[in-house]
Amino acid sequence: MNKKRGIALILVSVVLLAVVYFVMPSTFSANENSQNKSSEIIQGSYAASKTQMSWMVSYYYYPKNFQELIQSGHLVYSGEVVGVQPAPYDNYPMTLAKVKVDKIIRGDSNLKGQIINVLFAGGDIKENDFKSTMTDSPIAPSNKTITVEYSGTKLPENGDKIAGIMNKASTGTNGIKDDFWMFVAPGSVFFKDDDNLYKRPKGFKSPDNNDQTINKSLTQLIEEKKD
Image 1 (cartoon, rainbow, N blue to C red):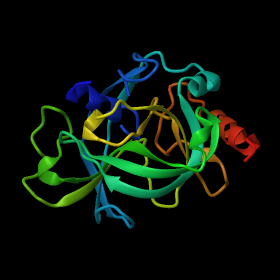
Image 2 (cartoon, helix red, strand yellow):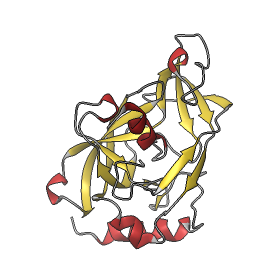
Image 3 (cartoon, rainbow, N blue to C red):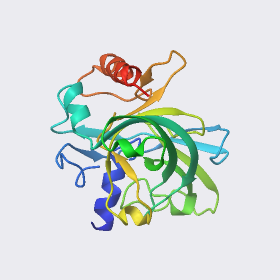
């Protein structure tokens, strides 16, 4: 898998931020239309300065319904984020999250109780390393570290309860030596909210405009799964 293909896999999966590698290689493609929108102070494992970036995603052959979305991944699970670390690659910000798996809905049951690596689009990167597109110049000639979060995605934080529909990445993808997992499509990562529902990140625009039903369906699957 070459460098540019690896980047494309993350940038459209989000939220990081996967076209060629996954089971449905023509599921979607992304055209970034990024600009610096706002900055705010954040806490946790990321830099103090947070930069919101917008992007546009075009969907092709996106799963028609919830069942197709579930079946598109080799692993469907829920778990808790227990660590995050920057994993920038070729001028793009990415984050590698450590996730302790508590339930397996679909896939290898031996992963239950294990800690897996999950790659997200966005995260910490030096300003002079960051390009919003492959042809752009760096956004600033500065060594300052910024945290980039793309619209329609959410960066993982320690303690987050998440669920995902994922496929395993090939060894060495994006320069990562350890095994890791990537989300099968935009909208295939869910964060548990205060109302105990697993939800897609705010700002994500589903091509089927059916986020509420999908959120409830995934939550129900997780709740019904015996420990």
